[in-house]
Picture (tube, rainbow, N blue to C red):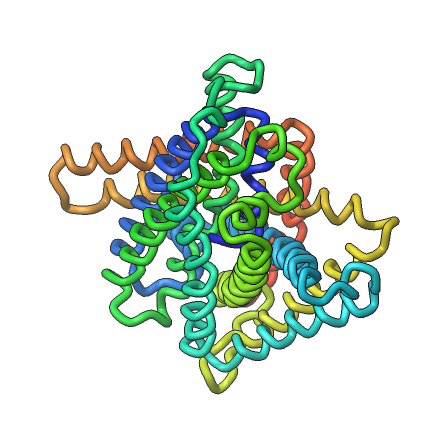
Length: 417
């Protein structure tokens, strides 16, 4: 979850003032409702690969499952291109030539993509080891800023509480939509479930505890940054966490935060490269994606799917350095965010169906259905908050997959004859 977005969010939230912290809390509660339901789903269907796709496929059938797999896969490799660009951008603090030499930037981005692609083809355990190290290294500076910043807070930076000029309800709604995007990825522990020991317990723990800890880091560090840097300066800041760190530790603090951002983006890229192979792998086993995506190497990894996706990531990443295509590229990243919210909504609906088939007391069943409904409504709210144009093009992107679904169903049905 903790990638490049967090490091710029305080600047985006500065126009709202302290009320944005309420938005953080609301989005955290919404994310926790989603995480809780994914935790329940992982316990209901522990030995499934594909997370949102698998749960949707089991509960709602082929077509809904395909739409989730299709949209999620597109979203992941578009997002990976964006993460790579962010990684190169932050690395520029240490290698200034990356900011001026496009060829060097492209080579650096491609090197990171294919190094982590290779790591992920070695096995889930090896990719997980990289993830553990990068997670610890990226969280520590954020925790230091969050805790250390509490001693440097200036209460006047939170007055007036609502700077936006909107109503309090409107400001909270806007900041909730903005901050929710920082929680995208909360479902990722469910995706490689078959490769995780004791998934009935471990996937649920990873999802719920991980979301809670991330929310705490987000809110604590945002309070610190807003309390240290004035709202006027924060609105125009290109590196809000770096500015806050510099106020506490001097220029060394800037490099500390830049290093954390480099590690955060590198770690996020590693985790999402793992996911980009697992989702189509699950759909291919159900014959909803080409069988090539279901092939595993001797390490039990769907290497073909990872490599194909990385080729697409590499192409999109390179587009960012072409001025004529840059705007199109950025727009695709906005669409990729939307297409992750759709699987959330489908997963909540699927759980509401699956839980009614379980032999549990009716009060407990309706409580769980209610939590899933909260998660569904929250996902729907975030989709609406994405804006009409993004929803319009996101719908077209999803429907564009229908011919592929038709072809796979035709092949699947003919195979039964």
